[in-house]
Image (cartoon, rainbow, N blue to C red; front, side, top):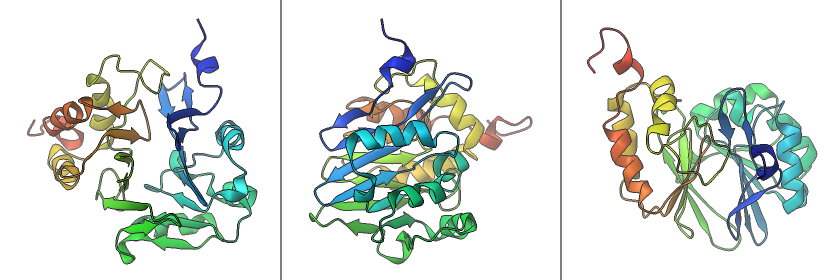
Length: 250
């Protein structure tokens, strides 16, 4: 049987036009999940990752596209594991048409990376972008989950929610499609990184009406089909952050 590292050696198709280009880190049991959406004349790169992880991620990108074809980078929030490599990525892509999509609260912080690429502040542009094909990516602001400018991206054409850290998991399995231990695999990550159950429930409420077929989180495995509802119900009841502190309400 192939090892985790061998199974995750190349890009993995989530759908014909959506690919996982991440990796599994044994030391932290953290699966980091950049994604690439290839749509005719546009290629969208979600949460490109950190400096140490850049070679592993870019090798997988190169297997799929010419990096210069990437037209959008979506940054769900400013954490270094999500976008610490942005300055290196923009050098490799070398595309004058490249844009970074992020919330204003995130843009203020990633400005300190010294980027040349213009930042498209999604909250100032209708919380959506329209690709050249007409495909629309919708941005849902998820304040304090776990950043003031956190966003999820909904691709209505596929029914895919690129959720950032929300719905993230810490697992012992490097399989992007694994359901082992689900939904309990969501607990440790949310309890450590989300501020409270009240904040978590408010964020979930912003997503409830979307016709989600699959959730593609920044950590852990893809959540599909009936498990989407299971994940919502599980997190809605989960104490996290300050709820778990000594003397908390939960």
